[in-house]
Image (tube, rainbow, N blue to C red; front, top):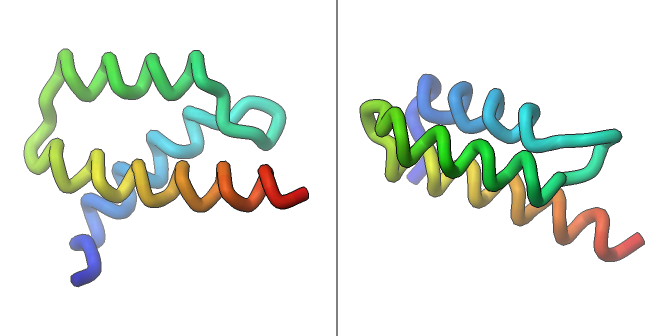
Length: 65
């Protein structure tokens, strides 16, 4: 089942924050996760799942090169 639009948008913004020079940065991911833990936005688990999906895709894509 696809995530609702607002969840996808929030996860996409968080994913964009996690990029450094076009690659996923472990430090930035840690910062995003800390922010999610601290603020606990509505539907945090759904946002986290979508964020995980996006980061996994990017990591897999960059490791194939």
